[in-house]
Image (cartoon, rainbow, N blue to C red; front, side, top):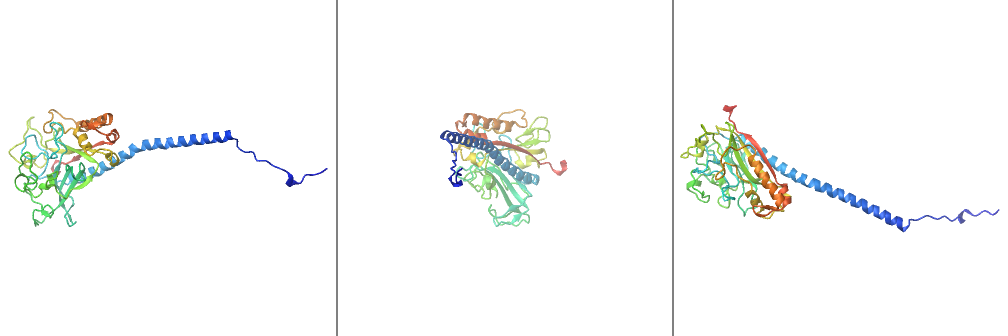
Length: 360
């Protein structure tokens, strides 16, 4: 019997048919589509979370800095404060200048006070005492327009004056008239005499006139600022003084400092801010945030607004409703506003205890 040589044996390798290749490509395309959909869904879910992380982080930084400043505030009757006063008071009420929005609405608040926290001279050396101030920049020509700014201007304890130039070290003076004296309405920020004759007039001037160069951005995403007072009688008010038998005891002939009486009636200062993340802010046209803050009401017993008992959370609730309305309607202040940007805005508040040692 003849045997075939092994090399003569022919083998064949089965291949894929065209139908099998088409099925494989279809399955592969389906898998790629499913993976892409999962990635897109995850990105859509994480994007708002990342935006909220940005705003949460910024609010925490701002409030932690405020907590240090308020905790070491000098509470005396012989120094200046720049705070909100009652309607019709002759001194400024610490609302942002030039920001009247809706009828009766004053806009962003400002505050200035002395605090035992380190400050800085132009040379960079530290001081154990500062003039501290917070404001939302209202100069539309500034790169920090509608951003929260803080000033910590270093002062000298030894009483040696280098002049009244705000850019030079200046001694702490236990007397009124260092920030403001009297004020007409509107207050002339660009003058050297009268209402803004104090050496620190630039600390409370907001806008293009005489604004202080020592302000620094602390909350680039913070575009709305409001504060009010929790008084020791349990009420919350714009005016840092309790009523006696239901009647105001504010003396309109005296300075704000004299009426304030060293915060003797104040238990805590409540601060409310509105924050937007950088990516969402880039979606808003230049005046968009101004329109949105126009829908965010002042504290209810602020100048020109309603009367009656206010409740904790009224301001925050009003602002949240304004943000939700902008997200749903795509408008703010009567103008278009990106709903995605409105959805990214978050409202925060914190209470800062300002009781004196005698109260503890």
